[in-house]
Amino acid sequence: MSTFLELGLKAPINNALTDLGYEKPTVIQEKAIPQIISSTDDLKAFAQTGTGKTAAFSLPILELLNEDNSNVQAIILSPTRELAVQIGKNIEDFCKYLPKVKVTTVYGGANMDTQIRSLKRGSQIVVGTPGRTVDLINRRALKLGNVQWLVLDEADEMLNMGFKDELDKVLEATPETKQTLLFSATFPREVEAIAKNYMTKPVEITSGEKNQGSDNVSHEYYSVTERTRYPALKRIADLNPDIYAIIFCRTRRETQEVADNLIKDGYSADALHGDLSQGQRDSVMGKFRKKTIQILVATDVAARGLDVTELTHVLNHKLPDQIENYTHRSGRTGRAGNKGISIVLVNGKEKGKLRAIERIIKKKFVETKVPTGKEIVENQLMNLIDKVQATKVNESEINEFLPTIYEKLAALDREELIQKFVSLEFNTMLAYYENAKDLNDLSSRENSRARATNENMTRFFINIGRKDSLNPAKLIGLINDQNIGDKIEIGAIDILDTFSFFEIDKNFENETLAAFGENQPDFDGRSVNIEITKKERSGGGRRRGKKPFGKKDGGFGRKRSSEGSSDRGGRKRSDRSSSDRPKNSGDRKSGGFGRRRRER
Image (cartoon, rainbow, N blue to C red):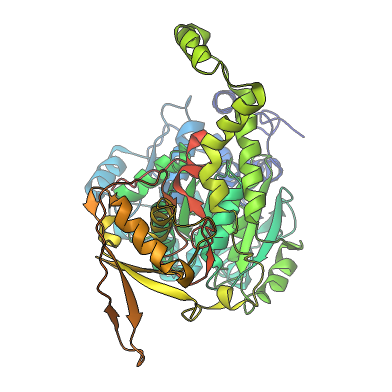
């Protein structure tokens, strides 16, 4: 493999690349850079996501452009604001030692006057989204009469987003003598049409087979039902305590719903989609790049240009409408030489699409089972132990406390100390997953739809609900803390705004009433009442009994999260199948994620 200097790039560019840590060119860079430098032929380049396309087209442009001419010499179009900003920033980094070269990035959602002022000061390179670029051309603020290079990056996505008219207008404003460079990760027929209509006898180069998936990415699928799709997603996250991932959804609404549920259930997550303002999007992406957010839930378009090289996973909550987009999704991981995993959740109807994707990426999906509670707990425990082993002790800070600590723990032997230490971190998770459902049993009524009310259960009313921050897991914890019975079974749970319902094994009906009455617990400072309720035989409405009991004291330790606000399955007292995520199983101390609220 050549060096960048051997590819024909001058010293200032090489020095900037050295500062950025670039050592060897990638395959697409090794092919594209000398081709663009040595020829004025149009170029059609295939490059998988994450292989360095931006450097492949921008470095030779920097090599060739006239630094002393302040006119626009290169126009680079990208489908999204995020990608345009990323390209602009990369080029600014590349021309660190070319002080006369100016780059302006133009996109919607930002102040147009600021962009116009930047253009008036002179910019040799303009990076823009099609819509804003056309707006500036119409205002005569952007003049492309001297353009030598037109770059179409992610051309397939620009067509998918309906930018054909804008592309036509930009092309009309550029001279026929320009060199057109088309870069794309996939080459469907529509992109081939761009090449045919907008390019003259283009040279074609690839860094692998067209549309083929990256060799660094493995592909897995999990079979789910609509009822188990979100619980399965959470279990996958729980199985991987150090996960750093993007979850792809098809619609903005679905994206926000999944993100909201993850946040509510204690995950370090946020949403990225087109309904957010530019400021909100910048904030979310900034936190994700810094790993303040560990799970980003995004639409396909919003995630374009998100240049993150260390993603461990890409999770497809649902497959994209256009299966070619799967290549873009999976290409977000396995970058910069790292290994990555692309996971797909599919129901019975969606499974057939996997074969079509396999033909595109030239790889097979591996069927994987949704992890069991035991597997998750074991993985989390081992992750914790590994982190304990790797923890450096700050002796200068802790030494003064050690005598007192040793004195307090003197009565414990080694085994007992380890047991207590592990229990302190994982009692909640162990109980939470003790009798968790097998989500791989897709034929079970419990996994496919809500079950009817069990005749062996007694239904209770409780006077706290969603507005009190109650969820199924917290309610289960509250019931458990009353010590009603070792093997008490909790049935369906319905959380409403100001009150809720839960079912208890009817054999423990009196014990439940007595326990709540005697313990007099409260919930976050609010006195709690429970009553026996019965459904009307006609099925319309409920009526409550006349056995209220007040609550005054009690707390239930760590919060437990839910797999939804309504849980219809029967389970043992410690079965957490209605909610597959205890809040504190996710904090950084226990090897998962800390809970972080969104900042808007």
